[in-house]
Length: 454
Image (cartoon, rainbow, N blue to C red; front, side):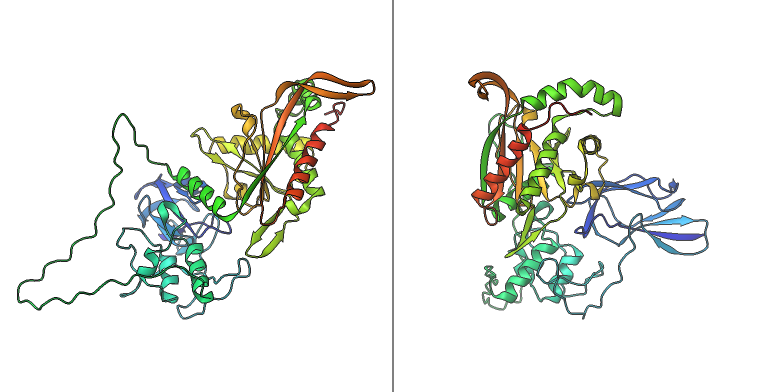
């Protein structure tokens, strides 16, 4: 009998760990190749991990809710083969770097980044797994702390951006860089040592740190704990407002020709292509054209460096049945025609609501579009989806009296009008660029060819 080591698969370029949500199979269960063994979650997406081979689950090395590094063995599968191998649905564990290897500078973010480091047993005297407040530190964070001589007292005072306030790799590397630059603002409060007389009486145990006080509520209220995704969304939104000075511009567009064209062709479109035509791909087509005219809206910022993206990857905010939001990404949207955008929008929206998105489906976005009109709202001021620098919201389409210019003079007519709003990062997008881009999107919508075929 051979043994196959199932390792935590790599779920994306920036993912270094994942949380085990549920073991679908237990020790002693028989599994077929590609059959789901467990469900995991990252800060990007939830996924199912299939078995790389047929066999019997011999050992499970981690419990549900454990946070495990990418590439670490999480289970042992016994097979009929005669060799012991290590397998993963998507990645093979990286070779660990020696503990004495210096930390090189990362070319991607300009801060120190350790060599790929596996989760290893922490030696005596090293950073503890948890601090006095009960906050958990992953093996990767503890290894970096040990290599950089960061004490547990310093870690306790770091603001974590991970799940439940955990300190992530990015948090600790940012702190390391601040220490090297002499710009860190954390002042470590060393514990005060008070001399006490020597006594022959038995030593009195030190008092345990006070547990966090439970939330107190009075009256007719209900306390609801945030689910995992809502906590991640909350952290991401706070981080975005902290990172980018937000400015929002508005325009109103006449989309009468778009509404009339869609009403005319939607039945024929679905019969011909098997796809429902919505307004979203039409809006997305206008956005991609406008980005081509104003490419500096399609950038990100790292420190004082502007990174201009040549690919136009449009994220679309999608509401889930749980009430949470997720942003799947249409890659190279400028290379798709209206039919291609329609198929991509429908596919991603359907898989998002069915919780079937893959990690790569929500990565690589360069600009985001959100439709607040689906909630009946006429306009909104969306929060930028970091590390992007702009996000556009489209409101509800409403019939309104409007002034229409004709060859016979101005007339008042009933038109389909819609507000567009653009929130942008004022560090790199000023009012001229942001306002001009938004006006250009509206221009493309207002000049839509109502006579085009399908």
